[in-house]
Image (tube, rainbow over all chains, first blue to last red; front, side, top):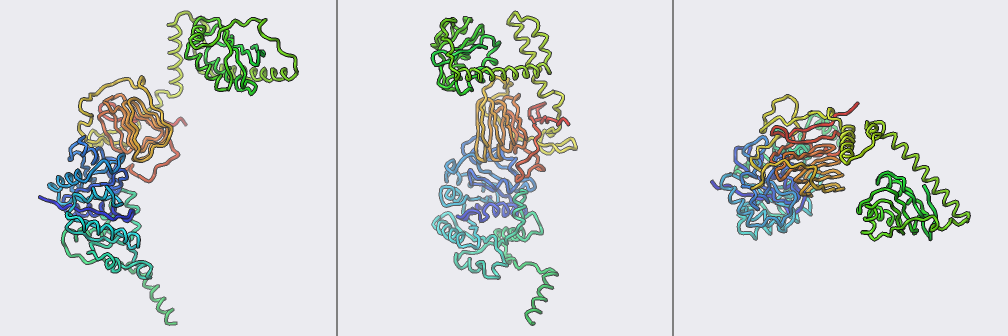
Amino acid sequence: MTGRVIVITSGKGGVGKTTTSANIGTALAKAGYKVVLIDTDLGLRNLDLLLGLENRIVYTIVDVIEERCKLKQALVKDKKNPNLSLLAAAQTRDKTAVNAEQLKEICDTLKEENDFVLVDCPAGIEQGFQNAVAGASEAIVVTTPEMSAIRDADRIIGLLEAKEEIKSYKLLLNRVRPSLIKSNEMMSVDDVVEILSCPLVGIIPEDTGIITSTNKGEPIVNDENALAGKAYRNVAQRILGEEVPFLDLDEPKGFVAKIKNVFAKLKAKV
Amino acid sequence: MEKGFVENGFIIDLSDVKNTTQLVFELSSIMEHPDVKGKKICLKLGDLDLKQSQLLSIKALIESMDADIAFIDTNSEQTEASAISLGIIISELNEEEIPSITASSENDIKEESVQVKIEEIDDKKENLDKTIEVHADIEQSQNSPIETAEDIEDIYEEETTQEISEIIPREHFETNFETLAVNEGLVSKEEVSKYILLDTGDVLPVGVEENSINTEVLPTLYISQTLRSGQTVTYDGNILIIGDAHPGSEIVATGDITVWGILGGIAHAGSQGNVTSKVRALKLNAIQLRIAGLYARRNDTLNVPYVQKTNEFTPEEAKIEDGKIVIYKKLRRD
């Protein structure tokens, strides 16, 4: 079997690459596919924390490249889902410990035995980005509805288009706040898509649950009730080729909200 | 205690001190006096035997106070030999050679102040003696004359064992936590095991075999700083860290690892197969504990990455027992 190698990148830091990698990976594994997550952010690794696997890491990607262990030994199985495994980055080394060819080789080996290989890319457009992209044939560009993140995403899309190996790239809009969009304080999803002219793979609402899930080491897709979790599950389904409508991000109207609405209307009449 | 002024200097009479510790103690107390600065010191050392290294450190002590050794007076052959090799002048202190203390009132005052200081030291010494008496049966052996070197050794041994047991009585160490699982998931007792062994297979480097070298004889690397994420310390010997080792840091030693603080990163003791190596910390919270070829991960229930600092310290020690990593905890005495 030949799996798909997808790189998750953004250019700008802090937009949610690692969170996206962890959640899409978990969602795909939950759907029954064999998934390997590769953390390529050497020296600033976080993906293991998000998955709660930090204490299980014995060998890292650098150990594999420097042949201190076999690739299989370095794969850390997820606590809950045996379909998901992680190839961790080395915390005590930097980006120069790995080169693009070595990473491509690892991706090529892994895609033979897995359905999906997701590569979590470091921020920036230097060596780390070049390494992460080397083995991938698809890309997901994560961005937030802010000018700086969009500018960086645009730069990244330009770099991806120049690469022959990348056959397709899609946009994932993270940390969207419908209330701010309504009050015209935040760019709308349509605005972002128009600026970047790039197909959309998902819209993830801002969710405070992400913070607790990161701290607990438990991806939010495991939480059935969280809106962000649902959004990530939808992204996974779209990656699998299914047509899923984008979530209605309008905040659910409870009883109190309805009453408030009524009062607001009455006030307007008066 | 005699002293006097000689050619812009002092004579310090230390002929009645019994050992080097006392000598250094008294000497440093005298040297603290501001008048000593820039003066030449004549040491009267009496019968005390000093090795070259000991004499050198005394010289360094005096020089650190901006003073110089003019000459020493000694009855011991060993001290004489050490002094010759260090180029220190040896001289008999004859009463005639000592210039009489000038009768100026200023000098008198100085002498008085020095005298007072020494009396204070004597008081302290008495106190020290008392504290020693409290927990020592050595008194008896002190009374009996020590004749052979063997006797001295015996007493020394007695003394040290006494002191150690005073600090950490064996019975106060107890296995509170145990890594009960040989492989992941096999917990045989109800209590939560703090660490669970990882099924890593053979992780020792090729050609390295298990051994049990006494770690006490290994050299020790002393580090006084906080280890942060991404920092690694590797040493062929023991490692002592005064400070915290944050998660993401890595400490690898061929001997023991001691952290005087919170150990949150990875600690690998006996990395070259030494199974007698130990890991100790004021708070043992390592994400992974590795001793020789055994790797254990922290139990997931204890994985709370954002709670790091604490005021509750329970000194713990991890070592290998029966093919498992066992953690000994120091109990509170209250």
